[in-house]
Image 1: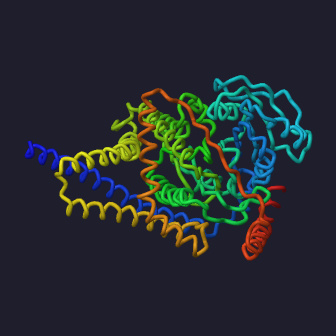
Image 2 (image 1 turned 45 degrees about the vertical axis):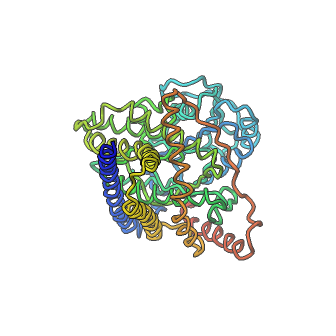
Length: 505
């Protein structure tokens, strides 16, 4: 019996070693490839004059779609922020998804809205639209408000797609803060496309927690106050600056963040819009668009640019974080299952042979394998068959690899468009990299396993995602930081005057 236990022990250890080796190789490749992508982007954009894009009469037209549900507390300010974006060929569509608060009434009063007759171009099936509103004030001519029956985020986005008229769709969360030149920077990849058609593009998303927001702009960047928030700041650096950039360069990207992404409207309509029956609608849409292009045998590209273009609030409560990661796991499983026939199918190129297998083996199975490792460790501990010297070496190696990967991500971020410029923020991120495996990682793994279980329970809920709200008061800053924020905001406004002039004329 003891001999049999040792045989099982050897087999299990070798399986975990093989999986760990594969993870190390994959993330080593991601790190190297991402650095090359960031350096190439910076080199190509060193002398870019975005005012030329703003003044270009042939610049692509964008429709920005922002679903809103019970956002009455901040909806007016959020829309004002969107209206200040530097881009001429832009329409802003706010979809009121059956809000039960005073969101619509506040918008009507603030922007002098009136209900109009409106021709809806798209044919995606959605819940009933109650009315379309436009402003009587020509200063808000870009703004369109759509009131509809509640149907969830995907349904609200589909209504916005139907109403939109732009060549490209910018889909965002209404409570995100966009950099004012975000659309200008995202327009560039679409202007540069040649033989490969750009069907979707995203930018880097940063954390607005504890940052100071004034007039819809981030005027002072600060690290989140809580350890949970700081760990997510590090996680977002790894995910966007390393992961998304590497897969973008390798033409294997299958996820554009639902918080901020741009899509080719014609192809989205051809694909039928967002799937209302999944909680991972952003990933599922990109996979479906790529599948469509592969079947049409057309050259295409899904890309990410390393510019920090969007700021969002992340959960700093364990309960809310668990709900979010639970939903992410269920969304991944739904997408992989729905498109399972693409897996290892050479007909679908990199999508079927590389991207989907990676997501299955490492993004989906990763938390499950790790959780299984904890169980195996406890069983072997009870059986008394653990080789402690070997375990200590392996444990130290795993922790060291994770720590080094995080440090590498922070350093690549320094090369890229770093937003955490204070020395204390850099030191804080390094310290966070040490604590993450023991504090944050077990929470995420447990949430992923619960998401796996909930998927088979047919749980389709989003979970309540309460937000704490942004810090709107610049006066709360220390004196030196307050002066710095005022100067930074002022210089940014002056620096963009030429762009504004071009947009207006």
